[in-house]
Image (cartoon, rainbow, N blue to C red; front, side, top):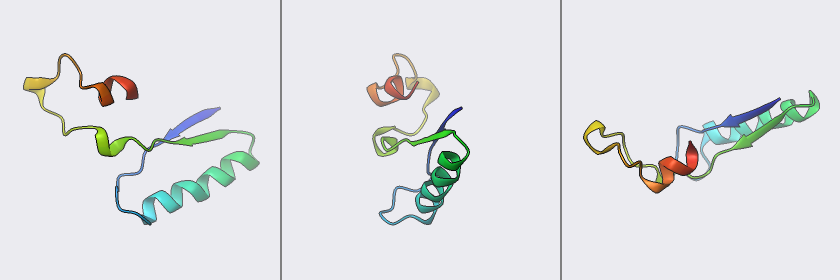
Length: 62
């Protein structure tokens, strides 16, 4: 199984990111893979009036 983890915090040393990394170790032990997405800073806030074409960072995440 492969899981994508997205931390809700952009702060360096974020507790959320640290928890995701710790969870990744548990995933490894269970034979699964947790990948952390590190491009959240480039994803703009959602704007329905400006959703197509999707910004490059959004298209990459999809």
